[in-house]
Image (cartoon, rainbow, N blue to C red):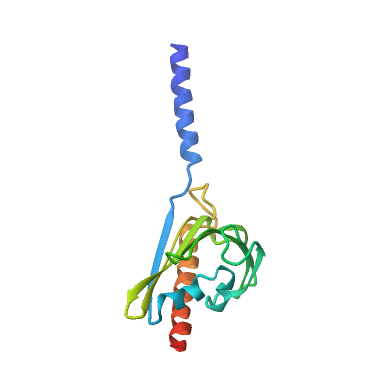
Length: 179
């Protein structure tokens, strides 16, 4: 009987530990915009991993610190315009044929954990393009059910939603002004 009780207690303790150590839910965002410019023109700007500061208003500067521009494995160091914080990002996949790139955070003042972003430029016909930018991530304090202020789901969602919306709107503005 004693062994049976100990077995039940062990199972309950393991279940409790699993619940306590559970990760936060994965969050995702998706933004898209139509741009009156040919997809190759849009890709030349949006798909330049080392040149995001040319179109993303939240990025003050971007500097490649490892590998060449648009080479899988390239690392860029970004400085944010709003507060001067820096973040390092790594290019995980670069597919110019399909006008698609994927990247992630490496370190620095990140806005989320387990961050994975994909930017794609599609041909919409008639010399226009559709840019899709999606991200999946978890809040910074992913290990707790009661995250501190600024490390919760809402903060991560707001930060990245605002960055994606502003970036795509400015990309459209710049490229359509050139047409």
